[in-house]
Image (cartoon, rainbow, N blue to C red):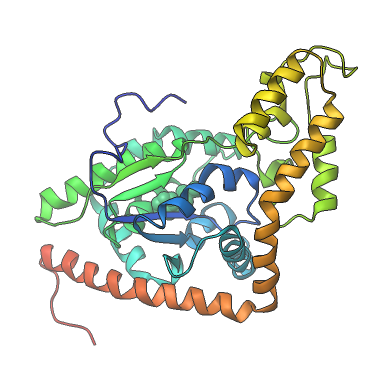
Amino acid sequence: MDLKTENTAIADESKFSYKRILTGDRPTGPLHLGHYAGSLKNRIRLQDKYETFILIADIQALTTNFEHPEKLKENILLVALDYLSAGIDPDLSTIIIQSMIPEIAELTTFFSMFISINPLKHNPTIKTEAKERGYKELTYGFLGYPVSQTADISVFKADLVPVGIDQLPHIELSRKIIRKFNELYGGKLIEPFALIDKFPRLVGLDGNLKMSKSYGNAINLSDDFDLIKTKIKSALTDKNRIHPSDKGNPEICTIYSYHMAFSNENLVEETEYNCRNGKIGCVKCKDNLFSVIKNLLEPMNERRAYYLKNTDEIWDILIAGTKKAEKIASEVIKEVKDSMKILYFPRS
Ligand code: TRP
């Protein structure tokens, strides 16, 4: 999807002085290497630079999993554990549980009064997602999730939203909704910019375009090393290479794309050269990749082991984050209502 060209919703990090980041994930299961390469790694870099809010979007998860709200609690914990293990620092990043901030739902309702449904129906990401999931009819909540996502961003006055390229249509829409809100009511909500994740989502172990839990082609951050080794062994390479001396095409090899995502430049170059010239076999190349991934995950596993022994601490972090978020959201909703002239009297 080449949405990048000339898009005004894309942030230019060098030009502006952004202040507050908001981004999020739906808690639908454990995070995998694709999440790490695509977004987590970036967030870990950004948290040093900006005030960072990360939303565990449990309500948004219900747009596709409304039959099973009972799974959310465990999934929230798993996602938070993955964040903390990966290196999201709770002193630098505020982790929030979406449903614990009712102001988000409130603001979603206000936005939904003036946004028409056509841009939602024609949103390319909504369309693709609906198609992938085989939805014939869309629920109100699913169709409207970009509106609710706009409220996620606005209620914290975030100006920078690091997301994958698939989310860009949503950020464009957010900007339009917020502009309209400000025009209608003289509001002061901030039009955010998207900071597009530089590394696109990883391909799956089976060569499928997307590593995804639902396709069963992912290496989870929480997988143990034996399992990771087995998964790497099973990964699709250049099918035409049978002997190590056969000349390969790294560009069609899953393993090579993982090298590009995780290995240092030297190893990437060496791998490319050796593969093209039939100087390394796939088995050895996979071993090399396994070592790289093992090195990446080892420090994460140390933190994981700590938090697994101290799950109360994870909940404490979530409670503290949500409390901090609550303060900001309640101020912003007051401003919103004030600008709409519906702040009839203060609530205790
Ligand atoms: N839709 C995002 C995703 O599926 C998750 C998300 C929810 C989000 N709320 C957000 C992302 C607000 C950015 C900002 O990846």
